[in-house]
Image (cartoon, rainbow, N blue to C red; front, side, top):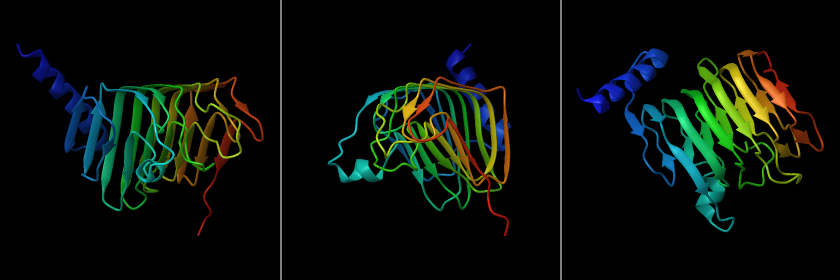
Amino acid sequence: MNHGFSLLLLRTSVFNDIYRKDSTLLSNGTSYNQVKGNVFGYHIFNCVFADMFSNRGSYDLVVVNGVIYFRTTHSVELLVEDCVFCECSAGGIYFYCPNDGASVIMKVCVYNCHTSLSDFKSGQFAYIGTNNLKRNEIDMVSISQCGREISNDKAHPLYLVLGIQKVIYLNSSNNKVYYYSGFSSSGSSKFNMSFSSLYDNLASHSVCLYYRISQKK
């Protein structure tokens, strides 16, 4: 029996269960400097992103903030599953696809990640913006020790923007930033947060939890 092929089928079915279609690209345990793209469906699983540092003098790394990076007007559906992000000073995930994007982050462990950008709106681990009628979900994610300094341009270990937001089993602890040290949400069309803990987070000039509703038009 080919166990590797069976695992591949199992993982493909996870993406299909969530999005009701197969992924365009399947990444299994590959070593990356950075994942970038604008294809239709990305399924990234069983990967470790570790010791990824940025150079503040590099134009690309200032603009491209995140070892997984998407910013496009194309239709993109992202699933990140069973991954570890450790010591990523370029940030973990930057996903901004408000025209036709969807994102699900599940079974992910994050330790000591922070953004290289001087922008208090960026996420230390992740900044995720989707289409307002599509998924923007966090499921079984642990984030700890994100944000190294209390400087006035550091905020949001995790920042969800737009979308139908569902946050379940999030553990955010021991993060240290200037603004909003636990979890941040803005502009969602629907929001649900349950079975989550925000513990021992320090924001020197604000609160642990930031939630901003969208304006009705």
